[in-house]
Image (cartoon, rainbow, N blue to C red; front, side):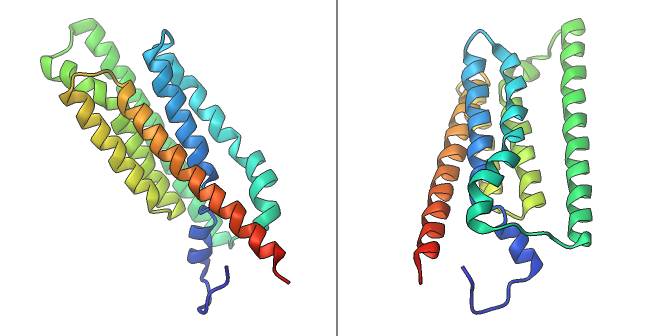
Length: 197
């Protein structure tokens, strides 16, 4: 895993997220949300999504850190990460408040035709924005690709006049499978590294 050049802290920070565990958990959260949306749970299926992310820390300590070790980043990097996380949470809460206010407005005044047409794609668009923010926070460029998959799914669900579940299920599958491949590669590579004399 060592390269000919010296790894900078930015390189280390980016590679810190290359094990795929966050992808697997995020993909499963999206998949369950999408499948739940198709069932009687409806939008309540979203409630389970943060629980998958809460599992990341304990699973990382159990699966990843024994194979990769533990890295403590500089104070400046930790402050930047904390600031980025704070802004991400603030933007997420702001987006949620806007969606709730829009839903209340539509309930009181009725929905314009355009919003009825576009609203099934809104959940996937919000998750795509979260994927973009995750890319900025982690430096993992693959989250941008996940965001593009979700945006394409949002467009498809609007064009096909489908419900919001389609892009979440497809996006969840893409993210979970990609993460599983990364995690499998990480475990395989770490095993090979441990077996070397």
